[in-house]
Image 1: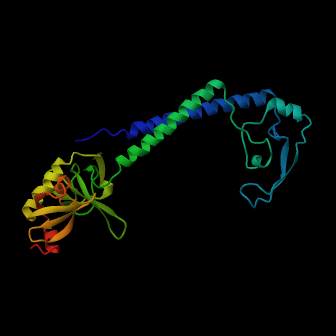
Image 2: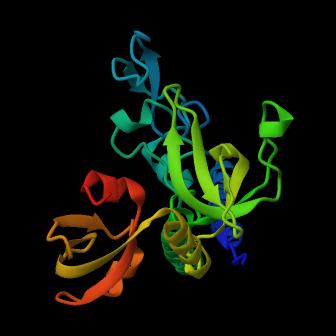
Image 3: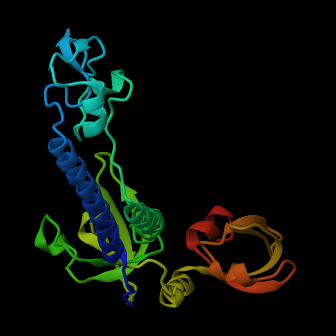
Length: 277
C-alpha cells in the first residue's frame, strides 16, 4: 500500500543546488578580496572614496548619516579603480552611487549558475506539488507513527493504518482525524500522530466498507435519476418523493445515467430527513 515519498530526495536536491551556488559566490568573493588586498585597496574607505562622519543612529538604515571624502593620501580615483571595492557592504553603501559591491563571475561560473538556478526553480516547484500531495487531508491513507496521550485504553495503537474520512478541529484548535482501517474499524488519532503513506489510494476497500455499512444500516430504495451535478443527483422514489442526494453518501450514483432506474441504499439519516421511514 505504501507509495514512494520523494520529498527528502527533492529537499536534498534543493540543498545541493544552494550549496553549489554558495560555493561559487564564496569563490568569487575570495577572488575579489585577494585582488583588493594585492592592489593595495584603501581599508579606511573600503575602496569607496568616502567615510561616514556622523549618524543620528535614529534609523536602522543609516539614511540620516553624513560623509566626507576619504582622507588617506594614497586613496585616489586611480587607486580605487585599480583595487575595486572591498567585497563587503554596509548599511551606508546604498546611499552612495557605485558603492554597492556585487559578485563578478567568470563565464564558466555564469553558465554553471544559470544551470543551478534553473534546477532550483524546477525542483522547488516539484517540491511544492509533492508537499501538497503528501500533506494530511481527507481521502488519503495514513499510518499512526507516534503514540498519543491520555488513558491507554483510549489511545490509538502505533501502526494502525486507515483512510482519512474526516478531520475535526475542536474549540481549542486541536485537530483529530477520523480514519477507517481496512477492517472497517474507526479510529480518532490526533493529526500530530499520523503520517500520509498513500496520497492517492485505490478506493475499492473503503467503497466496499461504506457499501456494506449502508446495506446493514441503510434503507434500500428504487429511484429514478432525474438530474445530476458534479457532487449530487436529483432522484425520484417510487413514492414520488424527489430530493437531492450527495454523491459522497451514495457513491454508486456517480456511474448512473440520467433517466435510469436503479436500487440504492440510503443512509438512515437521509431516509428519515425525506420521510421515507
